[in-house]
Every structure is written in structure tokens, then in C-alpha cells.
Image 1 (tube, rainbow, N blue to C red):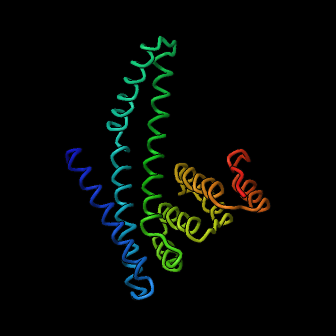
Image 2: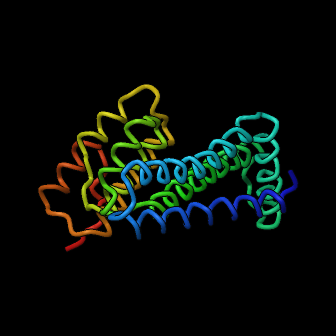
Image 3: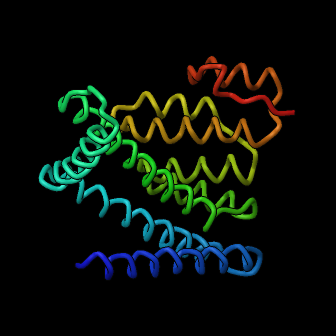
Length: 212
């Protein structure tokens, strides 16, 4: 699929999820529970399939190395223009770091988009049931993103337990920690709760921005 066609399909899929989210949010009190569950899981799966497709592409060494090569070439050019003395090896390391930072940004953006497209405090029971049944690291991120944003309920003990599981990847851990940090910076948090978050998830105090 060409890049232009892929972009069109991605935009169409994301818009579809937004429409599905509007339906379940606006009709949370009138639609049957089973219909709400079906729409929610289908909407979530659309975005998570985008994520899976993206990961499938970069898991290919040829593709990931090609992207890193492009970043490396750009850094080398910048290095030459600025007359920096960084070696090609160090520039390659910087390129790899930028590549994985890009990976994080894309993953976080898709999860966050899913949270805001489908989330609502009216759908808490639906969200918890569906995400429990799907039972993947991605659905865990979606569930807790919704609980934090719409219910102001960061379930720190559950998050700590999940992070320790073997199938919970490092990038998933980074995303859930970022969600918690963002939650603390955007909502009033008591000093006691903030201390528990800091101690339980081992988040440096400087990251938990003061608020309220």
C-alpha cells in the first residue's frame, strides 16, 4: 500500500472510532449493555489493529534499519554542518534512540486517541468488563487511561502488579508511567497520594509536578 493510501485509510479508521465513541457516549443510557460492549470492543480493536500493523512493520529488521539509516544520514549532515566532532558510531546510537522515541510517541498517541475517542465516566463498567476480557497490555493501557482521565481513579496497586508481569513490555511500562505522571500534573493530588504513587511506581519526585 502506498504511503498516501495508507494515510487515508488510517484517517478513515480513526474517524470511524470517533463516531463509534460518540454513539456509545451519547446513548450510554438507552442502548443495551451488550450493544455498548460490542461497539466499545470493536472501536478499541480498530485502533489496536493500527498499532499492531505499525509494530509489525518495524519488527522487520529491514524496515527498522532503513528508518535508522535515514535518521543517521540526517544526523551526519547536521553534524557536518555544525562541525561537531561526534563519531559516526555515536551518531548511529543517537539515531537508534530517536527511532525508539518515535516508537513511544506513536504508541502513546494511538492509546491516548483510543482513550479519548471511547472513554466516558458513564461507561466505566463497560470499559472494565471489556478490557478484562480482552486481557492484553494494550487493553490494560486503554482501561487505565480511561479510569484516570474520566474517573480520576489511578489504580496504582493494580498498575504496579501489571508492570511486574513478564508479558508487559518495557514500552507498555513507559506508557502507563507517563499516563500516571500526566494524571498527577493535570489533576489535584493530595500529598499522601502523590507519595504513594512515587514510592509504589518508583517515579522520581521531580516528575510528579506540583498541582493544587
